[in-house]
Length: 134
Image (cartoon, rainbow, N blue to C red; front, side):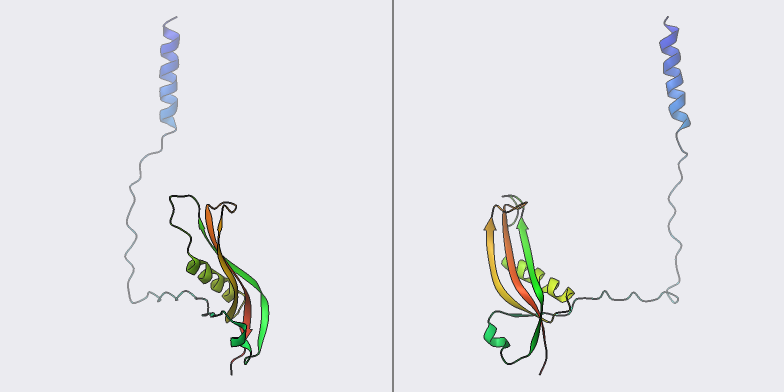
């Protein structure tokens, strides 16, 4: 009766050793010659988006409305850094640049307490515009 547990133990140990793969050392990548390397392309950055806070600034320039845009900065819990309105405003401008806008008319920026998923949240809302130059 004592032989059965010993046989099962020996069988289980040998079964696990059959699954083990041999160790292969990691080799360093081949050194490439520097003369044949092509330079890396710069990452495309969104075009700068001007921020308008007053509608009277737009009166002299023709523009096209491209839609509403918003930006957020979230503080997930009390220990995180507080939400920043400047970060929310910048994210709004970046979203406007994805719409091919070159300006944003800012409607409002505010800090909201206890929003969904955030302890506190900075939110900026505006309208993306394509302003024609003079």
